[in-house]
Image (cartoon, rainbow, N blue to C red; front, top):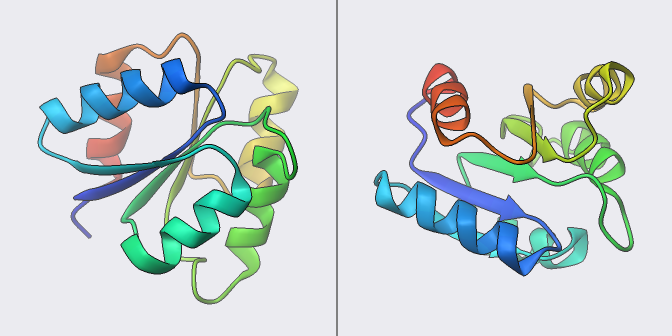
Length: 121
């Protein structure tokens, strides 16, 4: 599967802007959401090829939302990369156990993120 459309889910306007600029500059179609509820609406209309998921958000956190998406037949095949400031090994393992395909920590290194996206495509 070629990754073309990416949904960025992050409650930080700065992070959403940074990731949107980075990914758009590299040819991806990007839409953003600031929480899980907003993201669900975007998924139904945008149907992304990849989701970049923050962890610390109001409402459902990224771990919970990733688990919900991984269990739902309509979204279980969309790869998720956790993109978070939670940098402990236990956080990484937990994120992957919830259904994420990969895990990057903030501040995001552009080359690392782009490499992980390319590896999924």
